[in-house]
Length: 156
Image (cartoon, rainbow, N blue to C red; front, side, top):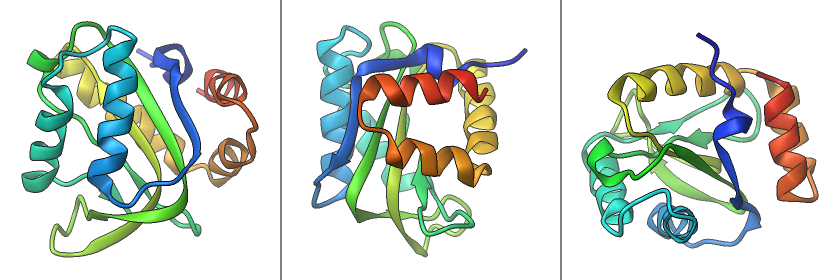
């Protein structure tokens, strides 16, 4: 089964060149966009932030831009969707593989999925996407959320 990231990405929840002070602030802003669009419960942001403390999602990538894929339990999700942010300046996430390490992240994809199996498949699809520096660069050069959705719909 092939997952199309672009099809689940909520255009109203794409924040480009976002200015944020912390990973928590980014998660809150993206969660709010998903909440206002009807994807998640009002408990989603806090649950994602709490999960990040014990199961971090920062991923060092090959280029200059690192990523994070925060998410939480399906009980906080009304319907599946994704939010995404590119950041003007990096924020710190803990490394998914080595939690004691800090990763400076500029690309965040927030998962709101309503099936545990879907989370695993989506994480695999996003991991594949993140291994393509050309796609990451195209996303960072995108001028509008619509451009991002188009890029991510055609690359997967």
